[in-house]
Every structure is written in structure tokens, then in C-alpha cells.
Length: 485
Image (cartoon, helix red, strand yellow):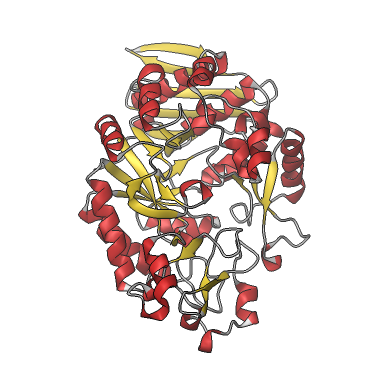
């Protein structure tokens, strides 16, 4: 169906007013017609990880609303939702059936018990040492009602046992479940599906169990065939080095530019365009761009190969001084040579930059770089770190997951920085030059100079990285105009 080349909004179902109904009212009142695509982070019933441990894809969390609320939003927006292809909740009826009946459960084959990976289910330490770990141990121990203890692969979740149980994508019934989910979502206005944690679906001993080939590409091909059946576009959520992502993009998949959030942060905090311009030269254009999201600003493994460790450590230090925290690499052999282990920088992008001008410069750079821009709801409102929420939940990522009341939203939209941001969004969404050819001027490393040209239309961004002030010159009705951003 094609994805509009316009700015999209990312939000939780309950983060802009409290539920789906309030979300629709907020967008209608304050941001009418501003976003053609709405990415609703998992609104399904879930047992953890703020929706990313789905119990059922056919049930909306009751406190958020109902499928009728989703349908109303689907009439106004092209909806984007997640399918957690790697895992499902331990509270799902499939896994609960497995816990009740053990190997006699009709869903026993849904899950990766360790005997599928090693003889007699006994882990091989050499294999485990190679795994790209997201928790101290990649499997959890569950006690079934049959009296048997089962070890099951669990990539994510700090609970022990984990609330997120990995699926065996070699099981035909799991693939059928995915087909049923695509079919169901397509009937409710979902035109884009993000494949969350898709890089972890292949468990191949002797490898990192991340993007293991050729099985990973074969799985993607299967999922794409299903998505095409329902006219759904796919967005792959993959953190990996540039060469791997290039190959995925070259095969026609939409991916995220996870290099960009850090590259722009370094550009503005260290007042140099060197890393950003290097990234721009080598990146494919069929990417979604973000600065902030429900997780953090990616560092390892996304920057592998282009690290200047001194600069990265300096950026991390500045962000930490401004209230950011870090998630860290668990596997010793996946840290850097000197032990540097920052996986993501967690916090509000606005707080990291600590300046209206720098923040607007960051958004302008994002919107001008080729790709489909996504704007996180905290970023839309230029929100700051929610330290109280982070401390209350014990999850550093929650610093950038504030739930806004209607009064807080009304106050935020009055801020000058938010109004400046909305003007930028409107220009990005409506100017014809953004469907043309992109170019970069490399006059000096203290300046950003981007331009889009399509026939007689043009749009040019210039930013002074020392003062953080910038302007956009553009064509309108055969006239040249200019605005300060």
C-alpha cells in the first residue's frame, strides 16, 4: 500500500491522556492532521515489559479501552503495531497449557525446551559463551504441574523465571499463529507491522544466536509472504552493524536507522558533524528514523566499527550529568576491548540536549535525512526525564516513558519549543522537495547544510553547530522564503 513520506507518531495507548479514547481526543484537539501514521506500542493484554510480553493479540488491555477504540483510530490513521515474533508471555494460554500438561500439551512444541538445542537438554558452555546475552542466563527454569522441571529458552526479561518465553519458529503452529495475528490486525486498520526483536528468533548453537544465517533470511521471507497477503508493510526492529543492515535493506525490507540517534547526539554535544556525515554517506534510504523511543539511544552494537571511544565516552558522560542512565551489555565477549559496555543511553532526548535550540536542531536534522521520520510522544511534548517513575519502577528506560495527564498535555503544547517543532513537522509533511533528491554540503565540520530538490522546488537546512541556531530556505509558489527554526 505504500508508507507516506511524512512524520509518524509513536505512543503508548495510555500515555497521552490515560487511554485510547483520550489519545484520539488529544490528537484531534492539539495535533489535527499532523500525523498520517500512528504507531501504538503494544496495547494488548500483557504480563510485563510494558506490553512487550503479550498474553493475547486479540484482547486489548481493558484499562486502555477496546478494539472499537482502535477501529476509530484506524479510520483516521494508518496504524502501526508490533508483533513480538521472538516471544510470548508466560501467562499466555499456550504456555499455561504447557505448564499444566507438560510434554503432553498440544502447545508443547511452541517453545524452545533445551533438548531441542543440546543432547538431553544439557547446555554446552562453549555455546553459551558465544550467545549475545540480554539477561544473565538465556533460559529459565519452570516447574510444570506434572512434576517435571523444564528449561525453556528466554532471551529477554530480568525476572527469574522470565515473563517472556521464546517461541520456536520452526514449529508450524507458531507460523500459523503469526498468520492469524496478521489477519486479525489487518481487519482493525493496521497497515504496518513492526517485527519486534526479530533478530533473536534463530537459536543456532555455535553462533551468537543473533541474525543467524541462512535461517534468519528464510524466516523473514516467510513473514513477508504472510504480510503481503494482508497488504501489510513490514518494519524490522534490528540492532546490528551497518553491513548487515544494508543487506537487509537491499532485500527490500524497511529497517530502523539506529545509528542516527547517537550520531545526532554526538554532533550537537561535541559540535562536530564528522560522525553524522560519515553515517549519511553510507546509509540506505529505506529506513525509519528516530531520535528517541520507548527504549534508549543505541550504542553497542549499533556503533560497532565506527566508534571513537573517547568521543562516545564523553557523550555518555554529558548525558549522565544531565540525568541519563544506561543499560549495559551482559556478555563479556560482546563488550569493547577496554570493557566499555553501554548498550543504550536511557533518558529524554530533550534532557540530554538541555536546550530548546539544540533540540529543534536535532529534529530538523532528523526530518531532513532521507527516510520515514518517527517522533516519540515524549519528544513531541519536549518532555524531560521522569526520575520519579524510573525510581518507582526500577527500570531506567521508564525515565522516558512519562504518562501525561490532560492538564500536562495542555501545558506542554503551549511551550514555544513544542510549537517550533510542530511547524517543522508541517513543513516536512507538506513540502514537495522531500520527494526529490537529497544532497549534503561539506563546507566545514561546524555546520549542517542539507538540501532537497525536486524539479523547481527546494528546501535547504543550515545549522551553526556552535550557536545551535539554524534556518530553512525553501520554495513556495515560485518564491524563495526563509524561516528561522
